[in-house]
Image (tube, rainbow, N blue to C red; front, side, top):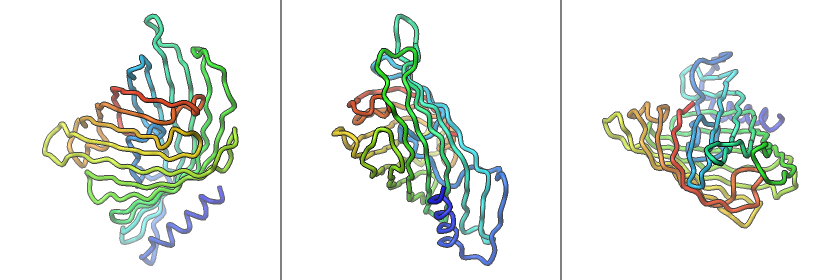
Length: 262
């Protein structure tokens, strides 16, 4: 909690250029920082069918409980909580038994000023094998802090760079990591907007490093609504298996997916 409180103060001090701040409890509008759509461990609402006959279901959401905004509206900051469940189901004789469950819950502090967005997350994640798995479970639990800076000059482009450090982990792992990537929605006047999303992760956990996640698809609306619309896309992933119980394995997979941005 201490890193989150410190960054709250830093964000407000950095961006505050007005004489007063407007505070709002339970703000009705969405969070100021964009989600990273190609990140396989971003909170999301999506369903994907993988080329290895698996279904991937992500069920997540966020809730901002407090916002602060300068009186001249030059910057806005949110403080909230988020969570997501990541489920893997494998195909077996016409059924899809549940194989793995990864759960994420955390706090976020984020601010937006012009084209720049700053975000701090403090997150807990754990991973488990379900009844449909034939593997041997391992102890897997982590808490980490991540700081992200993003450039969002308009409704089409999102580019970001993030760094994370493990605060606690079971098993013990090297603490440092980094992420970079972004997304781009083609600025055309159409109800069907092509887009691309990219995320790369560098971790010290395994030799399968870095990991690459790529999305190519169609958003069923046009900017500025494309980012928050229903999306249909092809996904390619290669690198460290994002499922915690298999984090020491290499994974390369193709998927077809649908997602509703939360």
